[in-house]
Image (cartoon, rainbow, N blue to C red):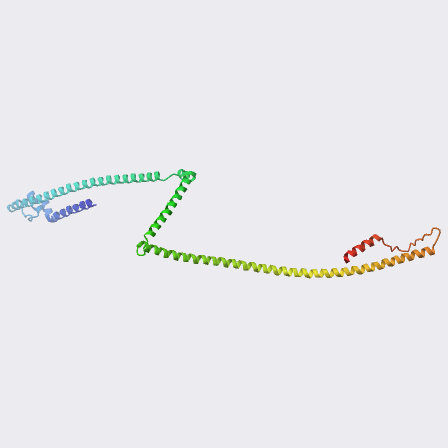
Length: 326
């Protein structure tokens, strides 16, 4: 970028110099140009220089003197132009050299950039290879997780590490206890730690007491609900037992009533049986007296109904009645 800025500044300087030279040289007017086209060679040279006006006559003595003066001015002008041309050529050669140098630098920088990019790619590939080499594979991880010997070894190492840490803490605590003084830094730290532990213990005690109280309150509420349910069930059972007692009393009254009815029916039956026996004996006596024949049998009356009942049935009824009465 700096080289391109220098090149642009040098080009601007050369353009500025050419503009100054063109401004310093006198311009040709149209009248002089026409005179140069129609006049002789010597007069045309003087007219082109612009130092003197074109003479009226051709080949006169004053015209010759003018030609001599304009030749010196033309030589001076030519020398100026040659010097300017030489300076332009020198600036052009410098610009070419600067351009070549800038191209060379650009190529060098491009080569360095390519080398750096290649190095970066090499470093990135090396980093990736190192990562892949250091990272264990899935098979190794699975074997490490599934191998019981490795697992046992790790457990033993872990237990030993925990034991050593506990022993180290104990020894450090013992050492700090031996070195403990109220004015020492360790003593102050221990006192602050004890205060902190005491506060934590108080908070934990409050939390545990609150937790126990909440637990007891919950158990009490459950017990109360259980007692309410038991009371309700007891009341229902009492109502049911009262209804059962009333039903039993009603059944007992009906049983007593039925026993009394059975007793009355039994008495009536006994009286009827006695009457039947009396009637049978009476009938048998009347038959023997009225119709005593050869065989001495009683003629059967087809219209008379046999009111006698078999004895076993009466005995069964009596037994059943006796059982019921008892």
